[in-house]
Image (tube, rainbow, N blue to C red):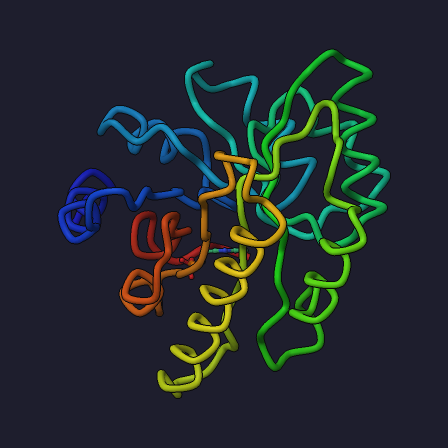
Length: 222
Ligand SMILES: *Cc1c(COP(=O)(O)O)cnc(C)c1O
């Protein structure tokens, strides 16, 4: 199937209010343009250099989401291009993003990344950390950043019961944060979870953004 057909197939299954981030990492501009021509406008990249190289070559009405681990020394590189940084995994990174956005007079949306998977290699706040950090006020009063919700990845496993329970934990943590810490922030409404192998489960558990690469563009060449 073509990129356009793959997109259509996925979008037809997404409930109202759930949006698709087409994860274009490792795929060339021509392939991304196929998705763009089919109407896709939100794309996800996970490497700073790759985003900074691709974005200037693509139409300006694209919303680029940065979804990978973001090193502090790469924040400046992506700041002109990212409309949303989904992978905020520390207060220090959040403050730096705010500062760099202010420096170029820009506003950026962010999601707080939650670590719920078993792999230690994945990054993000644990549930306990994010709740404590929110209660300490570390997510308040950022001039150039809007915190729009949470992002997470499930454990890489065939055990879909495990995956479902992790997504449920993300959903519950989102609700706690929203009601307790972000009650006055009407933009705090996004739950980004679900990839090619598990997005239908994520949608069942409250995802509002799914991040899909392989099911749209085919296998990546590493
Ligand atoms: C690569 C990636 C995806 C998409 O993965 P697929 O399995 O190709 O759909 C989603 N989220 C993040 C954070 C990724 O790095």
